[in-house]
Length: 116
Image (cartoon, rainbow, N blue to C red; front, side, top):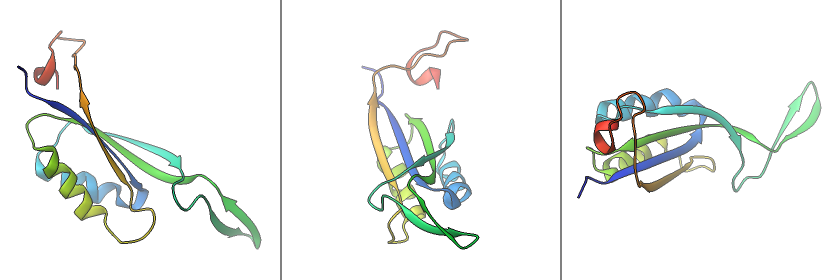
């Protein structure tokens, strides 16, 4: 049986981007995809004022990290992310872990862990 592959998706506030990236690299994670996204969770919207006019931001700027983990325990990745991201405030983020059924590298036709 091949080693398990897990996709970890982390969505959090943008100001934590570099701190989280550095912590994941120090843990040994490579192959990270980072995407700037917008979304809302519990807070639904934030009221801001622009030139004295009230404006409701319904979709808030976020950053999404995606990576497939094979050699590092997923629990370690989750712990590092939680430690870095925790402020105790709404918007700290969410971490999703899913099992990957297969990974293929197009250029070399490798599969599974070797494709990472």
